[in-house]
Length: 104
Image 1 (cartoon, one colour):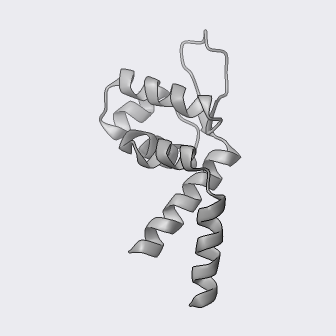
Image 2 (cartoon, helix red, strand yellow):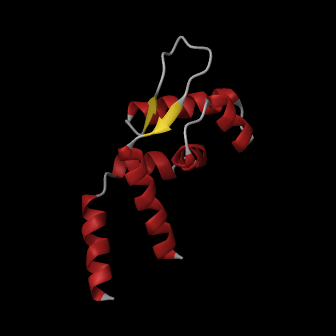
Image 3 (cartoon, one colour):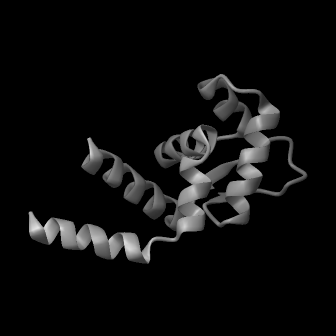
């Protein structure tokens, strides 16, 4: 138990708090990362799965891309944009999910 607590404290001290705030501060960004963890998707597909307006999805994807949490896989001029989660995004999402389950 003590070892788990010590590891938790070490993690908290090394956490990138800006990125953590970016993700947990917005349900939509968390949902997008969770969906992209399952595979490559277009903004339209994400919009349909989350039942959110496409403009909200596009704005959130832009923010996630700025922090290198997602990557645009094809040319922006293409009719369909394909997004994938980056390794950095997967790592951060996994850390958040672990901390959520630790709290429960």
